[in-house]
Image 1 (cartoon, rainbow, N blue to C red):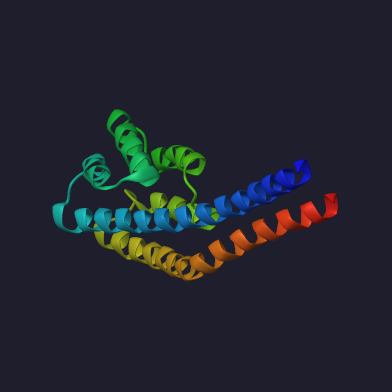
Image 2: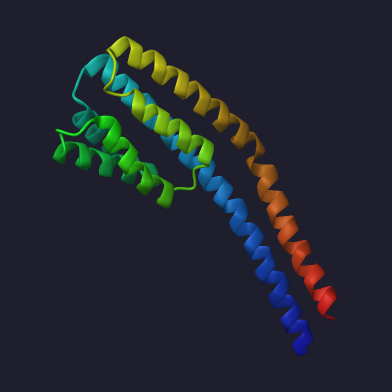
Length: 172
């Protein structure tokens, strides 16, 4: 009886580990979607409003939720307080918070870092063309991960369950 209960607990625990991995991938896809929304908001503000970067970030932070929204809000506060520092420096400093809190992949974080180095350095037209390039790269990554998302969730759940069954068989 105790072995059966222990076996069920092992199977359940390993299934939940697989489930958590699948959910983490789902969070990554959701945060990539949020990042694309931020880029589109940012690009629109640059094109039509012509506001300063701290104002653009504050407006964007109000519309975003989740970890990307928190990061943009923190970046807006940093850029408001440190107007004398270059924006690319502030962006790089704020990326530590995004790396720590988000589920974004390292490739997407590298693209976001590249995006920050673009902003505030060139004229508006050059910024927009470079922002469009980074947006296209992130969109491509997003579509690829979104297409793989359901398969990865199923695979993670199955591997977790089968791993638990395998461990139980080995222990008996």
